[in-house]
Length: 168
Image 1: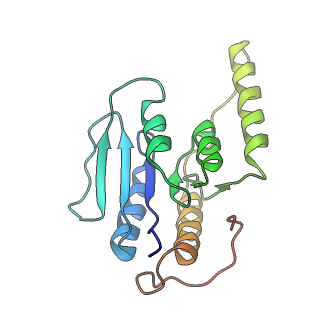
Image 2: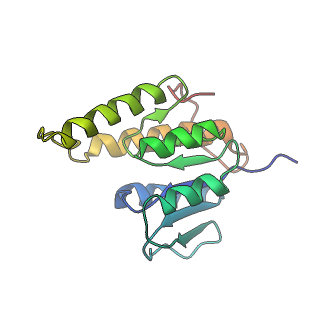
């Protein structure tokens, strides 16, 4: 029997609206969804949703996700180094703005992230990402639906068929 995928959420910085989308998706698809954070999180009562609190510290939540995920699992994160580790382990990584990280784009994303960190470290004032928008929320929901349609039991995932930039 084929193992069902799990959804892992790098939850410390995940927007609330993204968590709400994930909660509905977990209920609809009956996929285990685990929110990992170094603080206590509230999640709705559900056999498919759980919060996992890890000790505080640099990359503790990220390391726990990488340790526990299996090939094929989906990780929701905006953390590019975490996404690179997920991809290296055979998982899928989707950021909260609806963009999949892949073997084709992760090295470029890491290089850009490192370059921006260098600039900030040398005193250059670099603005952060744009505010999270309604179109970001919609893009995330659409990519999540496409992924779940491709990777879930068709009997538990009544999602529409659409093309996507998500890697196979």
